[in-house]
Image 1 (tube, rainbow, N blue to C red):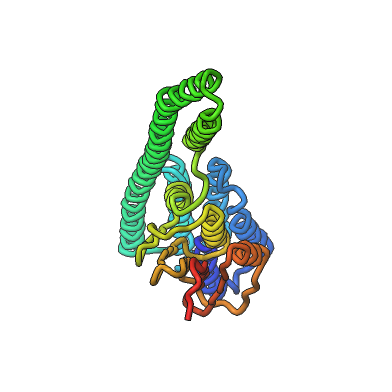
Image 2: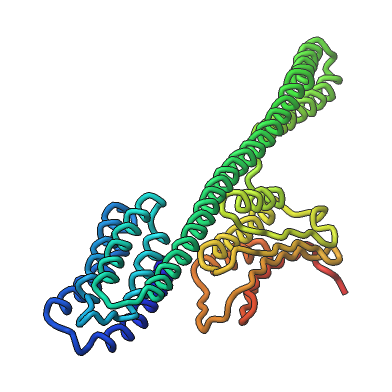
Amino acid sequence: MKKTYLIWLAIHCIVWLLALIDIQPGLNEIRLVSICLFFIVLFILPLFTKKPLLQTAFFCVQALTTIIIFYPIDSVLNPYVILVQLLIVAEAFFYLSRLKSLVVLVIQLGSAMWIGMESSLTGLELAWCGLLYLLVVLALFHYQSLHMREAEMKKKNDALLLEYRRMKRLLILEEEQARQDERSLIGHEIHDSVGHKLTALIMQFEAFRLTAAEQDKEKIKNLKDLAEQSLEETRRAVRSFKQREVGGLQGVIRLIRKLEMESFMKVSFSVQHGAFATPLTGEQSFAIYRAVQEALTNIMKHSSTREAQVIFESPGGSIFRFEVINLTKPTTFFQEGYGLMAMRERLEKVGGSLEVNYNERQFVVRGMIRLIERSG
C-alpha cells in the first residue's frame, strides 16, 4: 500500500509541476487555495483506506477543485488539466468499488465539460479530448473487472488454503490419535493377559512356597522374585505405551510437518547413512530435537526466507550429525544469542558439540554427537 501511494504521488508531482509552469501567469489567491486543498486531500487519502465513503467524497472534492484551478483565462485551456483529471479518475477506479468510482467519474466528467465549454476549443479538439476520456475510462473499467476477478480468486484461494490446513491438521491429529489408541490397546492387552497371568503365577509361587519343603523354599523364592521383576517390567512397558512421544527423530519430523502446515515454511528433510538406525539415548534424542526446534524457530522469526534444509546422518556409525541450512540475504551483522548458546550447552552435556557457520549466502547450524569411542 505504501509503495503504491508513493508511485501515485510521484506521478502527481510530475504532472502538477508541468501544469503549474503553464498556469503560473494566472495564479491568484483563489487558485492557490484550491491547489492547497487538492494536495491536502492527496496527502490525507491513505489515512482513510478503510472508509470508502470518505475516499469517494475526497476524490469528488479534488475533481471540483480542478474547475477553479484550471478555469480558462481568456478562453485558453491548460492542456495538463486533462492529465490531472484522468489521474483522479484512475485513482478512484484503483481504490474504490465499481459504484463509488462511477460517482467520481460522473463528477469528474461534469467538471471537464464545464471547463471545456468555457474554453475556445474547436470541434475537432473536443472530439479528441472526448475520445481520450472514453479510451481511458474503458481501460479503467477493464482493469477494475480484472482486479475484482483477481480479488475474488484470491479470496477463494485463501478459503481453500484454510480448509486445506484445517484438513491437514485434522489428519495429523487423527493419525496421532490412532497411533495412541493402538498403543493403548496393546498396553491393555499386555496388562490384561500377561500381567494377570504373572500375578496369578506369583500367587501360586507363594502358595507353593508355604507348603514346600524347607530346602526348596529358597529356589521357589528366587522364582517368585523373577516373576515379580517380570511383572514390574510389564507394568513399566504398559505405562510407556500410554505416554506420548515428545522428542527424538520422530519428534523432529512432527515438528517439521507442523511448521509446514501452520507457518508456511518449506522444509527439505533428508536422512543419510542410516541415521534412523543410530542407537541414540533418550537424552541425546531430546537434545537433537530441541536443537533443531530452536534453529527452525530462529529461521521463522528472523530470516527473510521461509525455506530450510534439515539433514541427519551417521557416517560410520561412530557419530550422529545434523545440519539446519537456511539461505539468507547478505547482511553485515550477526551475533550469537541465548538460543544458540543454550543449544551448545545442551549438546555438550550429552557428549556433542555445535558449530555455526554464517556467510553472505547461507546460515548453517551444525551439531554433532559422538556415539562410540574409537580405539587405536
